[in-house]
Every structure is written in structure tokens, then in C-alpha cells.
Amino acid sequence: MNPAELCRDIIGWLREEVFSSGGKGAIFGLSGGIDSALVAVLCKKAFDNRCLALIMPCHSLDIDTEDALLLAREFEIPHMVISLDGVFDQMLLSLGEKPEEAGKSLAAANIKPRLRMTALYYHAAKNGYRVIGTGNKSEISIGYFTKYGDAGVDLEPIGDLLKEEVMELSAYLGIPRAITVKEPSGGLWEGQTDEDEIGFSYSELDRYLKGGSIDPAVQKKIVEMQQNSEHKRCMPPIFYKK
Image (cartoon, rainbow, N blue to C red):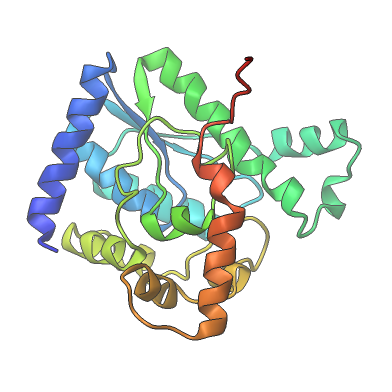
């Protein structure tokens, strides 16, 4: 991978896709993690100040918000901080659930990225921007994303980059080490990490996606996750009348 050429190609692609669809710029969520940091820097390079990062803590760790702000300030990325704590709690109450009892409920945790998607599209409509996703190839391949949440976007500029490629490109662009060395986490609940939740490492997943050999048990789990999440990567099936 030639990082300079890859950056140039992604930036050119972003401009072409946004402007050809009538968009004026880009909007994206900035979580404090490496994937969103990379997308933020690429969008800044593609659109300069015609971009907007939304930092949307939802009972999140303070360090994540701090890291998101660190990146936005260092790269002079226009940004807003929108707390979704109260909205999330009220949503659970409206659904008959007590927020303090949500714990590690995946059904409750998936509300968070769906609220963020709503906020992104609200500000996208106000500004005439396109919503840019932060999903990478490794996670998309196994369905490790929330349907109509963080997958609810217009464009996925790093969707063909393995996690290891995301790390390489982030290092090339000078993304702060505080972000690049963090253990990947979706911030779904306190102490949650990506690799603990999926049950194998990103290095194993990337090796498999590149055609390498891995532990048969891990390979079996990856294949099952790919099959079970196929519906998340496709448009809803339509029944066609005869």
C-alpha cells in the first residue's frame, strides 16, 4: 500500500461522489477512535472547511470526547459537541426500560448509533452535506456495525481498507498516537472492546480476509458471522408481484 497514492485516491473519490450528487461538503461522526479520526482528516483534506464533525457522547467515556476534540483542534476541523445522554435515557423510558438497568443489552446499546445517525442527517440536511461513514472493510465483512446506525450513511471512504491499513494510513497522516494506540471499542457500554465482543483479534480477521490461514475455530466463527450478517450489507428485499 502506497499511503500517499491511497490518500490522493480517496480524497478525489470523496470530492467526485459528493459534488456529483449535488452535495456541498461532508459531515461525519467523530468518536475519538481511529476509524473516525482517519475519515475526519481525509474529509478535511477533501473539503477544507466545508465539512463538519459531530462529537456525540452518549454515556461515553470522557477520554473519547477528549481525543475527538484533540483531533478536531489539531487538524482545524469544524466541529460540534452534542450530548445524547438525555435523549438516550428518554428513549429507553419511552420504551418501558430503565436506563440504569440497560447494562450490556445490545438492543439498548444499538440505540446510540441510531441516535447519532439521526443527528448526522439533521445537520446534513441543514448544510447540504453528505453523511460520510467510518466503517472499515474488516468490520463491514462480519457485520460488526449497527444496521441503520453507523451503517446509515451516504459514502464509506475506508470501506475497502482492512483494519491494519487504517492504522498504517492514520500513522502516515499524523493522527495523534493517543488515538492510534487505543484499544478499539464501539463504546457500547463501559469496558466494552471490539475484540472481546467479536471473539477474535483484528489481526486474525485481516489475515483471513487476505487469504491467509488462521485457527479453524476462528475461521468457522468468521464465516458464520459473515453469513448471519449478510442482510446488513444489502438493501431490503422487495416482494415483486407476478
